[in-house]
Image 1: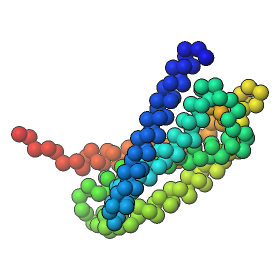
Image 2 (image 1 turned 90 degrees about the horizontal axis):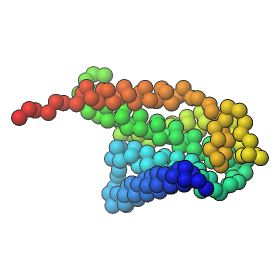
Image 3 (image 1 turned 135 degrees about the vertical axis):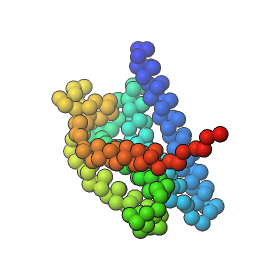
Image 4 (image 1 turned 180 degrees about the horizontal axis):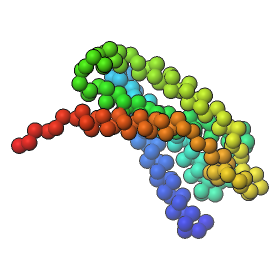
Length: 202
């Protein structure tokens, strides 16, 4: 293994280790809150779900890729590759969507009360769990084609127009849903900036 591969492997290992540690600590902290308090706040539920999505993303992409960089080959067969890629795509999509959901939730929460938001603000906490369920079903449906465009490496050859992950080959497919989610997040972040009250000058 040359120096470039060692540096790449160590960087993957650090990112993966720190990411798994950080998200696990967040999840354990919220599990402790669940057992010590009767109910989680909506923002806490969103952050807990975001940590779970990030953990799923790390376990399905970063862990096998780190193992591959350190020389472990033939980690997955064709079926295992398809399952891991499908779970990774769902985790990535959920991470983007829940981050967008958090931005929108915060923007609506701090928005000044008006006729357009008077019905939404009181109902916002009760919409969190149905939104989670909707995002899961939506992303599972959107990513359903991912297993059909992924395969385990064969004979060291990489097919054309595919992403070589080391442990798996995946055809690059762009989903416009992610661009929509990112635009919604940017809009919510802009609304937060506009609605943030100015600090009084001393």
